[in-house]
Length: 214
Image 1 (spheres, rainbow, N blue to C red):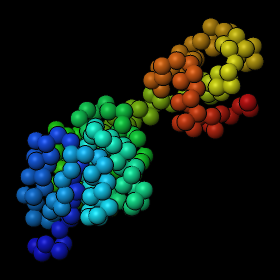
Image 2 (image 1 turned 45 degrees about the horizontal axis):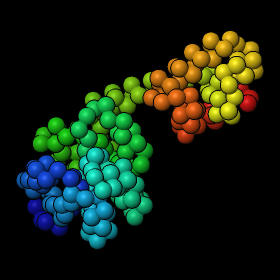
Image 3 (image 1 turned 90 degrees about the vertical axis):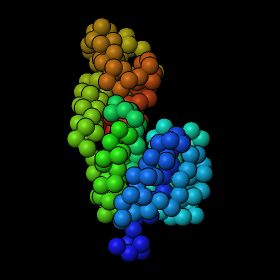
């Protein structure tokens, strides 16, 4: 196979041994080649700008410009950039954000040796491959993060600075029920307190989904 047709891959991983292992895995493949290795996020974006790889492999937990920031920076330079994000754990909350920011795929690091090459090939072809584990995790998060219309109504009012008593009076429900709704939303969104929950609900776009009027 001609080297001209090889997928040119840039790897950004701050763990030196894993970086070397990923490079070795890729270099064994006849249809791809490593054009750059970086253990620093800022260095990685500089190399991306200079080398313009076909596929970039990004560790989500890098130091000095973490993986999410690096994905965002790369896509700002090249909106069509093809990125494979690597994560240590299946429950990494960054997975959903990485995909939203433009990563074409997220791969668990423990699967790198057996699945990295085929994932890079698929991403190079313009596909967005995800393992069954990642797909199941994302489906679970969608269910756990969904808010009911009543929860949205309550949180809209909390976002306006209203107390539980004020919200209860306005919606004609008990204060205990308001507290239960707030606690439920905090659990679903992983919020620290009621204010944080309201902010997260707003950022996730729930306030635009409420069938009730403010």
